Length: 174
Image (cartoon, rainbow, N blue to C red):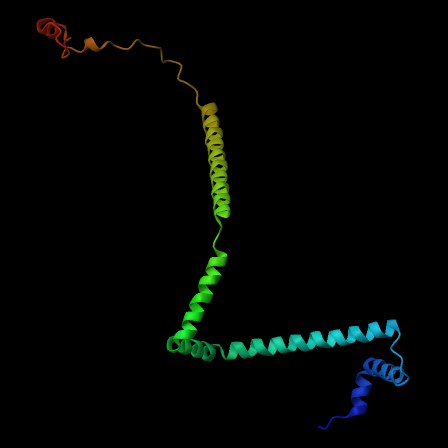
């Protein structure tokens, strides 16, 4: 179907109005009034943004469709071109170096890690203590238990004091 200018003008009345006003004023050597100029600029910016987004979307679709082919081409070049490989390795090393933490950052992370561990340890201790106190409240001691004196070690008949032996040896460091 051929392009029909009348149909386009009917569909885009606002654009036609802005462009015709601008055209008539420019013909007289004048510029657009500020409100019309702002409106025209906004329409122009919107059109640019829409075009940019359409381009991005087309590139995304192309990249998704041609991902395998693009990766194969990269791998082939990486394998066969030593200069390209050296450049890529240098680029990756630079990225890793930029991401590497400084000694101050390492010290700060270590301090924060210790603080977290201490906080967790205190919380666990408090929890265990609360559980123990709850258990202790439920325990009642038996009533019939009386305190008995422990038996001396000499009550065992198989046990003899070493005194005789010490006396016989004259206490020479035994």
